[in-house]
Amino acid sequence: MISSKWMHKISLTAVLTAFAAAAMAADPPAAKPGAVEGPACEGFGPQTPRDIDARVGSNKRAIAMAPDYKQMNLCNIHFHTQAEHKAKAFSLVSGGDSAGFQCNETPKLSKAELAAPAANNCKGLKPGDTIEVHWVHSSCDVKPGKGLGSCLSASCANPDLRVESQVFMVVNDKKALDFTKMGYGGNVVNGFHQAKAIPSNTGKPVQFIGSTTGPQYTEATCSPLQVTWSVRPSCAKVDINSLSEWCKSNEFAEDHPHGVRKLVTTAKLLAPINSN
Image 1 (tube, rainbow, N blue to C red):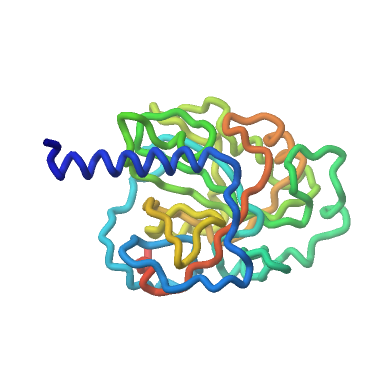
Image 2 (cartoon, rainbow, N blue to C red):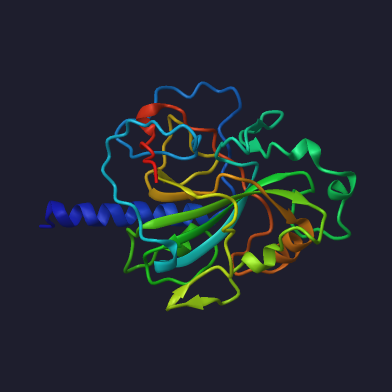
């Protein structure tokens, strides 16, 4: 007879394996705009995305912060159209039925910055868009690859996860940041797979416990996986030509932006953010 302890481990592994498979599949459908979500989830840990300037939260789940990303393995890089999180610097509500936010400086972009590029390998992306990039890190001994399934392994099904996040305005300007310099390219530092660079001049990152994101989740349908988040509070400009080059060929098979999850605002689904 299998003990309840081992049954729990088997069940957890099955859940995580199923999640990994789903994460590697095509983008899941978003919750229908205007749909009634129902009551907030019960029994789940803190959820993401959130307003990083609103530091109050009442979720009681005790979860330790993941190690510094430099002590973890980069396992995935992907990006979302619109910022999933909200902050003073990215608080413009996107139009239409989309969730998410735009950088506040978007209306001030020049005609040249908004001009269509000669080539664009990032499907559905254009100058003037706001994107939120996620550098996902895992405590597992894994190599970077496609989807969040790359953050797990058969021998490491319940890792610590950390996401370093940066919000960008996409512009047609080769003087803007070069995204190819923020990719992976086989970079290993002190034995850990690492991005070649992550912006360090866009303000002190706000750190908190949350969850995985994506348009399939709402306040009524919560994510079961817990994540340490590190969200930089200011926008930066990134050159669409460099994004196009990255979308053309990268280790993560990423060639388009993903959808966003609606901002989580219910206090019991948010962890408190400590001043740091």
